Structure formats: C-alpha cells, structure tokens
Amino acid sequence: MRHETTLAKPTEEELWIEVIEKPEDVIAGFDCAANAFGKQTHDAIWIATNPEWDKDGPDGRTRAAARLVEQWRRTTYDSDGNANTIFLKATLPGEGRRIVAGIAIWTQFSMVEGRGARPPDDPIETLGLEKIYPDDEVEQRYLGQLFRSFLKRRGEVIREKEASQPPSLMHLELCAVDPAYQRKGIASKLVQWGLDEARRRGGLEATTEASSMGRLVYKRLGFYPEGPDVNYHVDDEFMSRERPPNLFMRTGTSH
Image (cartoon, one colour):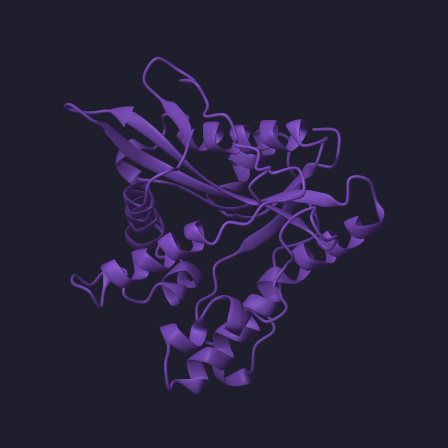
C-alpha cells in the first residue's frame, strides 16, 4: 500500500511548501529553474542538459519542461509506500491564485531492493542524452564524462549505506528559486522539508551536490562539505569548457 506523504501546512502566513500533484506545477517549477540556472547563474551543467530552455515552441522550453514532467511521472515507491522521488513546490499568494516561486526534488536512494531508487549505472542512458543530443556523439561523450564525475561521490555514499541501517539516504537533486522571489527564505524551507522527511523515514542521512550559491544555505541547515569541489575528469578536447563548481555535502545521520 502506498504511503501518501502528507502535504505540508503553510510554513508561514504567505509561503507554502507542498508536494507537487499536477504536471502544470512541474512546468512552473521548471520555469523557476530556468530563470535561476539559465538566466541568473548561467549554470553550464543545467544548460547542457536543457539546451532548449531559452527557445519558445514545442522544440524549445516545452520539450525541456516535458522531460521534467516525465521524470515526475516515473516516481516509484519503496516497500513502505513512500515515494522514492518527491517534487516540492514553494508558492506565494498572487492575484486569485498561488504563484510557484521555487522547486525542489528530493530522492530516496538505496542499493537495497524496496528501500529506495537505485542510482543510475549509465548517465548517458539515465539522462536521455541520446534524445537530447541525437546524432551528436561528441556532446553525448562529454556529458557522459561530466556526469560520471559529478555523480561519483553520491554513488559511493549510496553504496556505503547498503550494509547499514537504514540502508538508504535522501538526496537533494535540485533546489531552485525564481530570482524574483529570492531572499525570502524559500530555499531554506524547501531544504528543511526534505530534512524533516528524512527524519520521518527513519533518520536517513541527507546529501546534495551544492553550487556556490546554495552551499551557505545548506551549511546553515546542518550540511557539511566532504572534500574539495568535484573534480571533473574529461578528455583534453573538453578542458576549455566551463564547468561550475559543485561540492558534495552531507548531514551525517544525526541531523
């Protein structure tokens, strides 16, 4: 029997953090990420996996947002009925409706069957790079190398958990707040929701790959850095490409 995660009550008078239940809210969340990672910080990794983000029409933003909706639809459940992947929205009151101001994606990972989603073995297949860059072997190869480096420590920690109890962790895959609504504590609330859910699921450790902009928020909420920034191992022909700094951070199991 599936466990339906209880929707959060308003965390403040105006700001609500809720589980996404409609595809249109996923699309609105994609727009928040596009404004934050595309327009504001020009995050090379996010842009590389969403190359149509700034184009209008069915072959542009619509197609990029549809991939995120498809990820949302593919949510699986653990043996206790908990969703392995949780899409959260942060909303603020607007004129007759609530405005999606931020999005977060939390995933429970595990190597043990029924205790979480299994981490991907092949980034090219998992990210759908062949669909994003059809007939472009060079770009597929570059992004495959990029994400093998990016996901390396995450995968190692998930595998280390296999022999522990509980054999799972909660990973923050994405946290984005539209620049128009930043500095209102929205990112902190999206992260804290996931930490509270990790505690409810048996005291799971929480992890993330933190951008330069996000790591101060994570540190305030109990994450600590493990090692230096991600070292991207790519072929010489790709060395001149921009790669944003990311830092693997974790909470330990007593958060």
